[in-house]
Image (cartoon, rainbow, N blue to C red; front, side, top):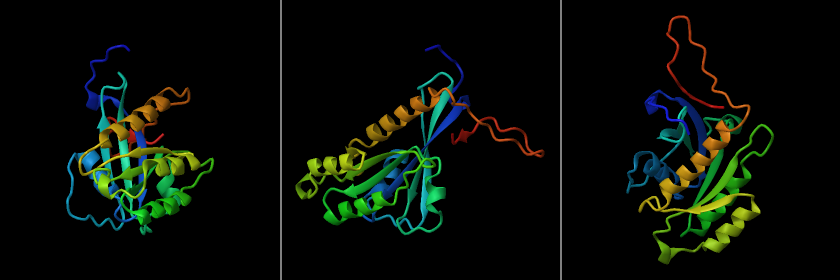
Length: 208
């Protein structure tokens, strides 16, 4: 790989959009905070709508910088239609609590709501959270893997609280999708057109 001395913040940014789904208590919102900010919120977090955060991964390519845009949508949120929410998503992560059978059942229902058409092309990942509570586990790894395989999904296990496998999982998925995107012969950064009253943007995090 040719060396490029351009500062990372000045490289063209390639956006990968992640979507988080999962019922109350699955830990998806705390996982978002753990990954994006590397902190853990002990108290319950009430997400009534949609939140999103950015995460950058550097030193992957001399010309491009990976920009992850991670969306966390409440199950009951009506702010966005499914079409708007899933549009341009590269990966959907469905969370459940390994110590809660109802949480696992909720993940099954969440999975049914994910559109799979030519308009919505994305990878699906099932995420078992709270593996630090192994003595309270009710969903075995084997059962979860079988469920994921039956739904053409990949399975990961994490602990947002103890920071187990959180960064490794999202970094691994993000990097794979990043290289897949920039290696596509049809890949191109599309820069937004500036308004007459404003100078052209220097660079932006663009959905492809």
